[in-house]
Amino acid sequence: MDPAGQLAYTDAYARSVEARVATVDDSGETALVVLDRTVFYPGGGGQPSDRGLMLRASDGRQWAVRAARKTGGDIVHELEPTSDGPPQRDDVLRVDLDWARRFALMRTHTALHALCGVVWRDYGALVTGGNMEPGGGRMDFEFERMSGDLVDEIEAKVNTELAAHRQVRVNVLPRDEAFAIPDLIRTKINLLPEGIREIRTIEIVGLDLQADGGTHVANTSEVGGIRVTGYESKGRINKRIRLELVDPAG
Ligand SMILES: [Zn+2]
Image 1 (cartoon, protein in one colour):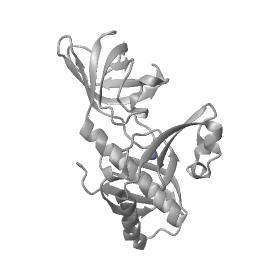
Image 2 (tube, rainbow, N blue to C red; image 1 turned 90 degrees about the horizontal axis):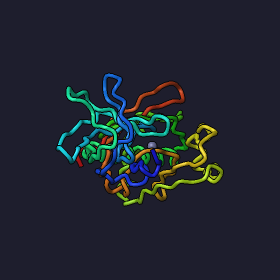
Image 3 (tube, rainbow, N blue to C red; image 1 turned 45 degrees about the horizontal axis):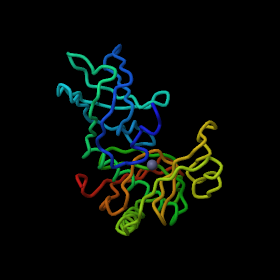
Image 4 (cartoon, protein in one colour; image 1 turned 30 degrees about the horizontal axis):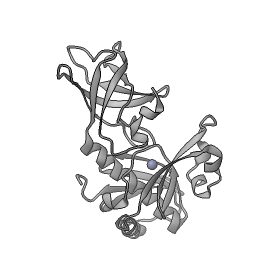
């Protein structure tokens, strides 16, 4: 599969595309389908994979896609089991995302990066990991000073940044160039495998810059507001902060 056909990385707002079936593996419990192009995000970086549909124009048949994943450079679509079989090689299909779910994930992912930006800028704490569902998620920090008293302050600061209409930009940089950016080093870019020659970054202009493979909104105003719903101590230094979108449906 040509990387240029993996549209989620270059256009997070592409929700539908016409594609041709490249391979079908029907040997397991569910059929696995690779297309020549797709709008599906295969999961990674704490963002779950998309769900959606494939529709065959020639006879109107459709298949539900319950997940996707990256295997050997390809985005593999995992179909819901059906009694009358998967699509065939060379079929032309329309591929549609469950857009409400994807857009909620984009808003959530950008909100979590805004949280990282605020926590780094104002408290000097490094992010160590994160995870999300549509509408809510968590980030882990090396944040010794974090306490329950800080929750309201952090929530207010993140909401101020989101309301500031900051642009969110995607860039792809040669590895050496990326390694020269101090802001990227703090997100443990040095843990990326040697073989990766180019590094994709997400920049919330003026707030946050991270190496990241996920899908994001184009402007922080699209996130709306967030609520910090909790924090947990995972040890003396490691702290977990949870947030949710105030209006998960957008
Ligand atoms: Zn991210």
